[in-house]
Amino acid sequence: MKQNKKIASVLDISQKILKEYNLCDNCLGRLFAKKLGLASNKKLGQRIHKSLKKKSTKCHICKNIFENLHFYLAKIQESSSGYDFKTFLVGATLKPSVLDRDDHIRSQFQMRGVDSIKTNITRELAKQFAKKAKKRSQQLEPDLTITVDFKTESCGVYSKPVFAFGRYVKKTRDIPQKQKPCGNCLGKGCVTCNRHGMVEFDSVEGMICKYLFEKFEAPQVKITWIGGEDSTSLVLGTGRPFFAKIASPKKRNPKLPKKVKADKITIACLKQIGKIPTGPVPFVSKATLLVSTENPIQQEEIEKIEQLNKSTIAIYESSGKRVEKSIHAIRYKVKSENLFYLFLKIDGGVPLKRFIGGDNVFPNISDFISNKSKCETFDFEEVKIVN
Image 1 (cartoon, rainbow, N blue to C red):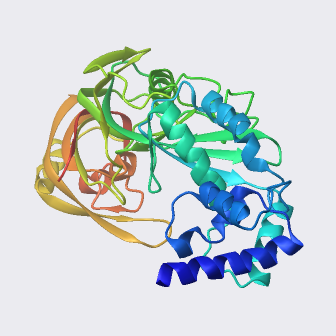
Image 2 (image 1 turned 180 degrees about the horizontal axis):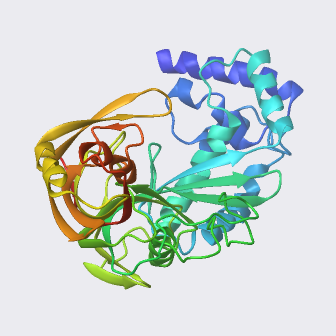
């Protein structure tokens, strides 16, 4: 009885609407589907038209856009081909006039709780695409987001980024850690740099990115570094860890080797991870420094270095911020009258050249041995993330 009253009410309102506007089965059914608890807007619209002996002609709201969904479905299939994905989301950009007409009718006839024309179109496209592609539509964090632009009759695809962890070993000097950005777009990505944000690959960053570009078929990669080194530094042992955000990949799960030679560096331990840690990642480094002194080394002075074992140093930044770091182990070996090696196990984030030269780091080697000193080179034997 209650359902019959609802149907009678629907027919009454539909009669009033159709007196002023021609609506297609989809748009008419959409106005009442939720009220009647029905899933198919089109079938409900057909029933209403039939009951009122009305014909579905050119729709005032959508201009019969549902009759052309096969055209946009083909666009979606074409744009998404080549991408690995399990889940997807379809979005749409409609002409403002379509949205305005839909809003006007819903407002005029006080149609509350009714899905918009945009929701109806994207749901229908998603339903049809899911059947053809044998993939699953998903609202939250889908692998692929597909946007259909009905104004330009085009289709855009955004692939959710994937994240990776790895390490690199650098056994050759004169390789900078970071890559210079493309001079045309300053790293944003353009036609000149093939959307990579870089045109050369002669740094650690460039070599890692080039490998990941090709492996994941991705346009851009953003590296999160765990510490850094000079271009003249070596990175040995198991290598320096890094995190990578791989943007808009076509391949989501390529096979990653345990170790790969990427130009002049070796990438090891490469694996996909769920996300990149937020905030600073604590780590400890083992480093070998070659230190030169202004005056000849005095044995009684250089022996004082051992007092720094298991001590704390303070670093004063230009902003005025004071940061404390720990020296876990320290020893030295004299090489010549004005040269010695310094072997350190130290918290990550210590500016090693400043620690030697005494630039706003206290205590520092220059002051400690009463001899102005300079770090000539520093190499890393191990970089370990502290959990």
